[in-house]
Length: 80
Ligand SMILES: [Zn+2]
Image (tube, rainbow, N blue to C red; front, top):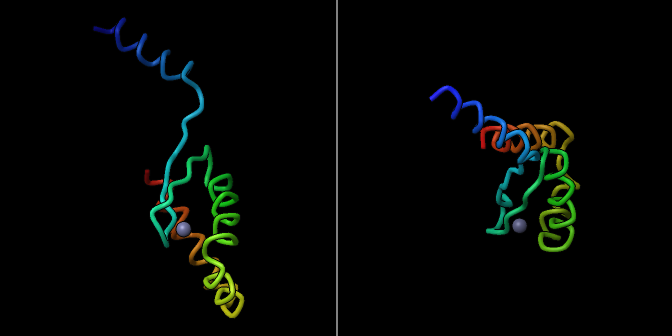
């Protein structure tokens, strides 16, 4: 039993990079990334392309609102 556990653990490590997949908060499109920062980069491009209206509205929002959104998205991402 113990040996098996060790082997499984090693496999996980060799498997390496763990990708997290999370959906856009405005549509069904999914993005996979190693970190929230990478995920957010993909999201930014996606927003520019597919949620232009939202980007326009976002310009009128305060920094605090933007920060709050980021924090919420990061919390969701980290919980996956
Ligand atoms: Zn989207």
